Length: 574
Image (tube, rainbow, N blue to C red; front, side):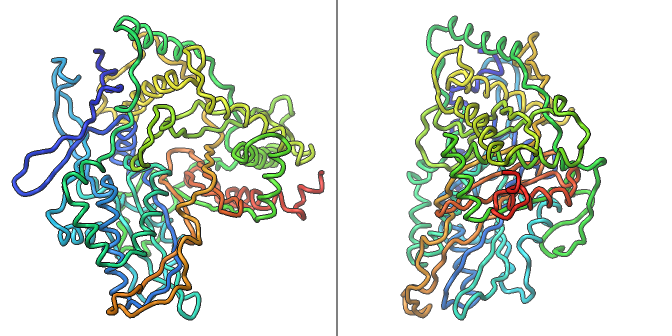
């Protein structure tokens, strides 16, 4: 089997138990998507690491030191429930193509090195946690996250691929507090869906009595439980290509030729928030007791975040426009992001004739699980990548609602193609073709992200290179809808509390806020959208702060929040 193809649906990434004297250790090779993100993190200062701050509201009768220990206990249970959180990454040498005799290659692997007992699990979890809970000085979670994104990489793959920070609590009522956290995950172990799953479970565990948590640790260390929780690589789940070996070779030949002759998207306009020249922003080492600001360890670029939040009335107005246009709200989100970017593009370049205006190009990730029928838990990183969609440029002197409807229809039509899943090689969005194309793309991405000295010369396209004349997207957009796991109201804070020694409930925790962030790549501007139970829309934006002008980012944020408000200057154009 061709070297680059041996990892497609071939159980190449199966977990195996490693013989040891006194520990239970499991290991598996990273999948291609996982390896691509591992290359980001290892070779580019933690690039793409998920760095999310989140906040709970709590009532408790626990003293601060006892509260810290309860959090450690819940964190221990969370890591044993979702094993990639306690995993490490290491190299191993193996035959280069699953036994084809082509020599040996260095493989990157997940290693799940299990604690010997519950007490050891707690101590190992403590080592992947930094508590500032009992610190007197208040810490702004937004500022702390900014420093975390722009200091040395926080996770150490040789120790743990996750880390949790507990920030000082603040009183909001007579017996209520806000408790802030920041979680850092190597992107190779989690995507947005698994992150939400884990944070919702963490909320549940914090509301669990300590005796039950300890028993959960004991049960989680049973070998049959461990085996059931080891998540597969997505490449092992890809369905086999039907037919004979000859038919399969023909299929892959066609896929590669289609990539060679495909028509690229048109060139889009450059993100108008970009600076004329890149800058490096130095931060005062304000949190040097817990973050490393060593110059030689800093990431190659600065990362920034912003969090636009639309009012309920503006969110409902967008939803109403989408209904009247016959589109999804997700398509409306793409349209709104495009519309605001177009307005700023006109402000920055007012003399460009309309006929020379380029379209808005949006890139977006795909959840591939439905394409290969995976119904398991969201417990790892499983992603595919789209070619992007094209949204035509409409000038800001047209009526606002009409513009939004037209842009939403354009987005909806293209996004819908990824949801129909019609089979057949002739359909570029069929599951089989999409998975095959993404597999080859993942092979190329994993190779491309390696520094020159580590490249292996893997080239799936051979003498027919993929048509790579693709322009960079104006920005990235994704919409996940309602994140049920991270919404307020799951736990009743008004329930009675007992004393810590009574065995009764001594801690109630309910979710309040989640602010997402990643360490950005060059020129990235990634806009993630979600909604709450009332339909209120909010955004988590991560961007290359060395490339984007912070004042223009703030302008974009204000426009996103205000453009659909009744008193917005935009509304006067209706």
